[in-house]
Image (cartoon, rainbow over all chains, first blue to last red):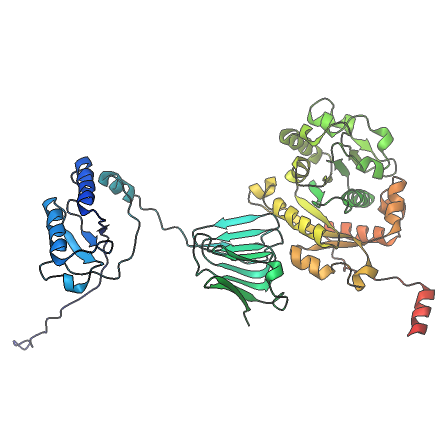
Length: 236
Length: 271
């Protein structure tokens, strides 16, 4: 074997990863807001210990020195700032935490740390985001599924009702009511193989049978929201 | 093995009682041991259609409440020895029915009969719910009109969720019986077509009973139409339906308009 091994290039691996951080959004007066933080710390001193915190300053108009002062005030309270949000780049100096963008909201359970750890242990499977119904939905029946889409393999009878947090798909005739995106999802749509619906609704905007064009009746169709107007078009 | 069959519809006046009597009599004529139960407590009619109204002593409520024995309440038909009636009470209302009581009565009848036909009251309240509660099979009586079809759809939904079989995860066998079908009006587009009804209800068809004066005439003399005039078109349609219930395959005939010789002649001349 050759004793000389060719020098291997050290690769720098870079990966993206997202984390959950607290976001503080101070409001004026800043002194009063800091008092609130103190009160929280008074109730549970370790609340922010070791937790990453992002400072959202979009509600404030602070100068460079103002920002620096706020950061140091928080550091005195043991709160370390991971990054800044909602400030002009020119106000951020190299000694300050970096500017962050593209943050997304997520739910934070305001639980006691111990309790939340216990809860995480028997980690429940994520709930399915769609509901499949393999039989016709009969008159008088009401199917409510706020977690996501409803798919029906069959018809939805006159006087029946589908209520979905997401979209509604009907592989059959839709003769009843279909309400999609009921928890404020304007991107939800309603699809059916034969449109004879009594009422279609998406995110609170609705149309009754009278407002659905006769030329669409008995045809495959979809309904969606274009701004504040519900559009219903044939699928083919 | 005994079969419990509920005759139901949701809507009133579509022909549940007439159909229960006709199907019950036809089954009995074929040698089956049949009992028909009137669940329309307070508005009983089945006794009249069967011509047994003058022989009612005890009724379903008496049996449910343990006041009378089943044998005391059952009335045997005078013409068909295999046909029995368990009448409803006219003086009580549906609240007198109890789930436990009906369960006991049906269980006892299962040991004595081949077929137990439950004539459901209209509506979706207690009486109708208990009539379908213990059913193995269901005949859904539907008229060719939108209101009746929608009510039938509702009833089918309940058969799939509120019966003992459904609660056990089993299925109640369902059959659509279209009654009062008027071929003339259907051809003029004044009624829903058979295809439309079956498409909406997505349930197999048991039979099509033509609208006929024979049905009314039979009811008025207290005789099921299959017994009163077995050769009439509605009676033949009921007999076909019963044969299908018994598992035979019989071609479905859609009633057509019967034109008299004169009208055909006139029709030709006009054309």
